[in-house]
Image (cartoon, one colour):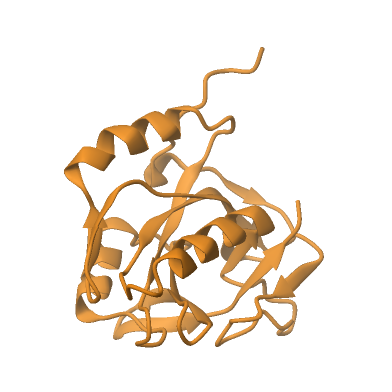
Length: 188
């Protein structure tokens, strides 16, 4: 019998030395695809099932142009001295959403906690995803503030999906705000 899964806080996260998953494919919506650059890993590798779940979540609400969001769960890794994230699962719950804003609903937080407890692997929150339906892929001032407050680790990534334009972009923080980051999809 495997041990009970637990949420591992970022400060406790073990960074595993490991080459990136292969094959990693560029996402068809990627505004900055994961093309090999001098052996550097992409900032984020999404498991194909996690990618499908978050994309379907965004597409399901594109007609209403409502934003969606969720958490990316996985592992922090390092290769050749460079940190990257592996997202094995995308999770969400009930949301309070508009066309220009989204947050987890109070009612949904208990459900989210229960769903997290059912996950059968130790994980860290490696980032979050949300959508900008029809507005493109970028981080707003609110998104940057959220990233700084909740996802400020070196390997944390914000993934933004625009299901109307069929675009997706990953971003990391830097001293001036944020920078685009490369991401890819792998099949586990």
